[in-house]
Image (cartoon, one colour):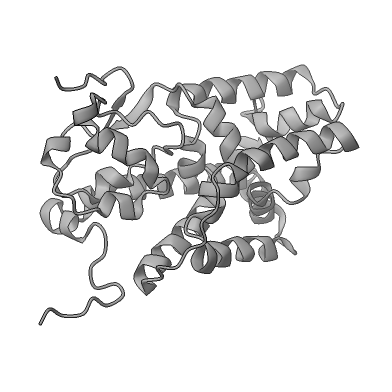
Length: 293
């Protein structure tokens, strides 16, 4: 009789770790965590050590007191509220928009956003505890929330969403003290853990929806370049925060669909590359998408 599967007994990526080694099976995950720590560290250097490389926060900041950066999602809210920003803020929003339009808008979600480690931890615990039940949330909800986040300033004259935006709350909280913000972050963690798999980032976050729009035609993409090697282990689907983006590129040969994941929902997190023992996936460009005849 086959042994009963226990929580944590067969984890996604375990085969890749055996075949490729720890580094290759976790490379992009480690680099993402390093990226998130470096971004946060650059902001913290000023208050803690007086070294002002990045001054401000994720909403608006200055690099070496010279180059402005600003979150286009928040700048749009400000404009709609009737508060026309300074030219430097508009320039900063333009720089960020161009940067993520090239790399992929939701690269922010997986490589910079401070909420990402929280939801990743909830997702990992779901797999370890073998929690199967998950409420089905309509993915269009984040588009409705995006519309609401931009409609409320138009009606009220205030940047309303920033009062409850978990990304802003957590980042400002780490820099200046959390206060009640821990309740919001804990709520997201518990929601993703017990209510809906990847519920916040995958279905609700309007900031993620905004960056999806920005990066919808981005150059950098994940490609199932060696999809003929796929053995249907499903590890990539298990770890992907947006698993619906994988199937067209992985299983689209018969329909003439190329191997590049073109869906704007892809966060370019690289976890599918990490956990695949067959090296099916790799980073490339959207232009290398010739389908097999």
